[in-house]
Length: 137
Image 1: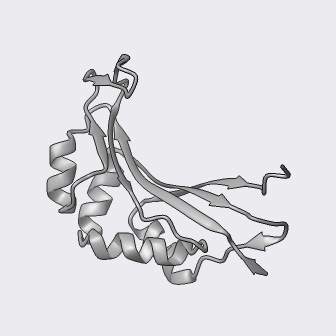
Image 2 (image 1 turned 90 degrees about the horizontal axis):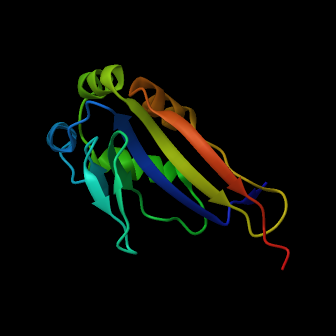
């Protein structure tokens, strides 16, 4: 199996009652972005929207070539919260690791180790994947 060309990922935590400062405190890491439900958020264009729910995101470093196992291990190295903390968060909020996996050619693939899958599962983190085929242009 040929290796994946590129991988991006974001740890996302959502919930109407989510307080970004609390999540930051218990996980011990600053988010890439965060918002509270009802908060006015100004976009790059100056358009203002109101957050429909609370959100805390941590973008992981892009990997070229793609290496999702290394991304998850890097995430867990940055967030040293124990399983009890993760389970408490997962009982109150929706948590996922949202991944974009990009192919440069056909028949590229990826494997996730049992340790990676276990680490995500123990923490109540769902794995979401968007797959992108190579651009034929």
